[in-house]
Image (cartoon, rainbow, N blue to C red; front, side):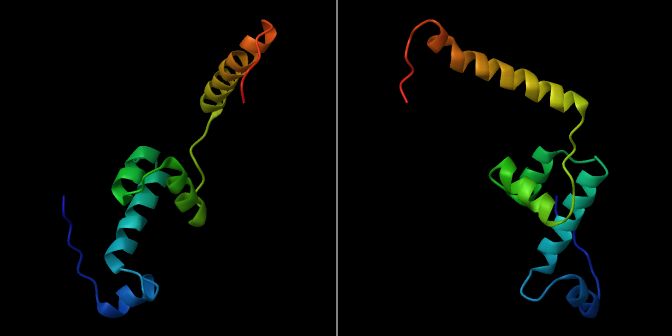
Length: 101
């Protein structure tokens, strides 16, 4: 979807740092607010802004002082995943096999 905004040049210069595309500044502001209010997910922000990785999204959010949405259920999922990975890594060594590395 294409959205057109008409704002006075003076205001555009105030909100868009010199050398920055005002349209990009507006798009980033929309993405940030969407994420802050939980209307947009990390994935949606990545897609909206054309980032290739989640790490780019994380850096972008951090640069703008926006914290990641991370709750207890996310922590539990990360703990479970870490335990599974740890078990896989320890598995061959505990059976007397050597890991190549």
